[in-house]
Each structure stands twice: as structure tokens, then as C-alpha cells.
Amino acid sequence: MSKFSQYFLMDEQDILSYVQEKYSFFPKDAKLTCQEIGDGNLNYVFRVSDAATGKSVILKHSGIETRAHSGRKVDVDRNRIEAEILQLQDQLAPGFVPKIYGYDPVMCCCAMEDLKDYTIMRTALLDYRCFPKFADQITTFLVDTLLPTTDAVLDHKIKKGLTKKYINPDLCSITEQLVYDDAVGNFAGKNYVPQGMEALVEEQIYNDQTLRLEAAKLKFQFMEHAQALIHGDLHSGSIFVTSEDIRVFDPEFAFYGPMGYDVGNVIAHLLFGYAHAWAELPQDDPRKTEFCAWALDSIVEIVNLFREKFIKKFPQLVTDHLAKAPGFLTYYLDSVMEDTAAAAGMELIRRIVGVAKVKDITSISDPERQLKAEEALLLLGKGLVLNRGSVHTSEDWRTLLVNFL
Ligand code: SR1
Ligand code: MG
Image 1 (tube, rainbow, N blue to C red):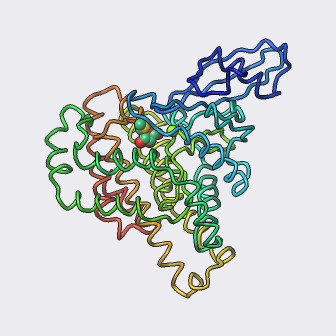
Image 2 (cartoon, rainbow, N blue to C red):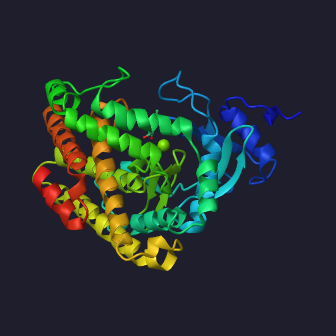
Image 3 (tube, protein in one colour):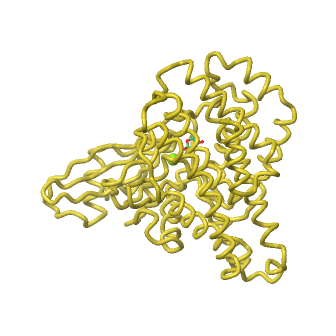
């Protein structure tokens, strides 16, 4: 009987035997090496390489507990969701995701293309690298993966089947708790408010009943609005980049939710990159001007191009009779833009006060500047949540960013 006919948590040695037993990527006598390279909160990511040929493959393996906070059980079905969503996204937006080579429901392990020439976008942002094509690339990915999975386009029974297939209760529950609950109150007792910000957070966030009500509405909107098959965790650690190209990965949080959640996350993490550069680079460093301008322009351009592409694609793809009614597209897109502003706002707040921080902020070396960056992002986040109804266009975004930053 195979060692891999019953689930257990594999280590590097196990993965070496596993890849040879399950796949035929490498000659049987190849001298393979395996390294665990994952730095996320949930899974184990192994790179298996054959030095003789330079060939390599990634094996992503899910444990029954998260890595970051052992003790929290998370359904291993997330591995199936990730493998299937990447295959679906590869059809909808070819060339924007890594290729999946196989998925094993027993070991909860999928094999995928090794994008070793790419850099994780967060790492690139921390190095102040600009990506002039990013806004165009990410908006193509967003519109091409989101719009075709909505009720406006898909046959409603097929869409409901997908909603069922990608119900993702454990991962959604992490988001409901970390992004919505924890952003406005230390309900789980795990928040970590930066030193020196306690009073501001109490006054501006935890004790603001208007903000709490808006967060409650947004949490229910996230839970109840099965609009499109979203990525669900589209931060800069879920995107690989080169100067020419992007690849979106890690869609294990995918489920039928509000489209704006994905768009808003992309924007929030550009803002984290911006804040890092603002805090770390001296005023006279030319990288500061160039990178900060690129980051803010990219946000404005993402909103602009997302809208443009959505408006162009919608009439080409729409099948629902009533969704063709004059005025419906404007109404629909406006609501997506409101969700975008809200999601960006909640993400900004929760990464400052909550348990899951971002390196862009935690790595800022000067505590005073770190505090300033955190305060600015926190208040921008709050402003986005409260004023989301009037943040629809790229110009609305430009005005808001200029006022807050
Ligand atoms: C326990 S998981 C913490 C965070 O990491 C993931 O990438 C999600 O953003 C989640 O909220
Ligand atoms: Mg992840």
C-alpha cells in the first residue's frame, strides 16, 4: 500500500518520495532536492528541483491547522478550491495564473508551475520597484475573472452550482473575523494595536459607533452577497511580478462574494507599499518621488481601467434580460465601486490594529514615522468606509488620496 493513501502532514523528505510516486516530471533516478519555501499563514509550499536539468515544480500542501496560529483548524478542502479556481481562472484570463499540474484530494496537495523567475509583489514593493503595466494587467485579470462568473453573464443554475461548489466556510470565517470584527473591536482578544496608538484606536475606531455600524453592514454584505467568484485574498503577497508580467496565485479564500472585495484589496496593498516608501526613504531620494507617484497613480489608474474594461465587456457578455435594462450597468458598477472603497478601507484598518500585519508596515525602521504611516492609513481606511457611497470614479479616488495622504 502506498505511504500516501492516507493523509498526514508531509515534510521535505516525504515530498521527495511523493513527487516521484505521483508524477512523472523527473526521471526516476533524478537527484532531487526539496525546500520548503512557504511564508504564508496557512500552508506549506515545497520547491522540488532537479539540479541536472534545472527543472523544478511547486507542491502546495495544506495542513489541518494554520501555520501562523497553531490550534486554529482550517478545512483542507481549501487545497481543492485553490487548484480548481486556478484552472478556472486560467480559462477566463489565460496567462495570468500559474499552471496546475495535478491535485490530490487524499494528501491535500496540488502541483503547480514554479514561477521562479518572478518575485512576490510585496517583496518588490519593499524594494521600491515600480511596475508601469501593473494597473492594466491587474484590471484585465479582475474584469476577466469576475464579470463572467456573475448572474449578469452566467446561466443562473450554473452560477448557483458554482456557488455551492465553492462554498468556503472556514476561510470565509477567517475573513469575517479578521477583516470585519477585529477591525472595529478586539472581540477575539488577539488584536495588537501598535504602541502609541492605543488612544487613537479607542477613540477613532473601537468607540466610534457609526464606524461599527458600517462595518456590520459590510460584514453582512460580504457574507450575503454571492455576486462573483472572487479570489478572496488578493493582496500583494498573492501576486507574482516581473517587469513585463504578473501571475495571480493563492486563491484559497475564493468563494462567491462581492467583486469589490478583490479590487479593494489590491488598492489597499498598494497603499501599504506607498506608506513603506514614504516612511523609509529620505525626502531627497529620487526613488521616493518616483515610487510614491507610481503607487498612487496606479491606484487611480486601476479604478479608471477597471471601470473602462467593465463598461466595455458588460454589453458583450450580459445574458440576463433585465440586466440589459438601460441604467442597470451604471447602478451595478457603482455598487461594485462602493464595495471596492469599503474593502480597501476595512483592509487598511484591520492590518494596522488586527493580528495579521503586513511587512510593509512592520518593517519600517523609524518608530515615529511608522506611527505616522499607521495613523494616516487608519484614518484613510475609516474615511473610505464611511464615505464609500461617494467614491465611484478615478477622480473621486484621486481627491480622497490627496486629502488624506
Ligand atoms: C490566519 S490567516 C491570516 C490572514 O492571512 C491570509 O492571507 C488572509 O489575508 C488572512 O486574513
Ligand atoms: Mg495566502
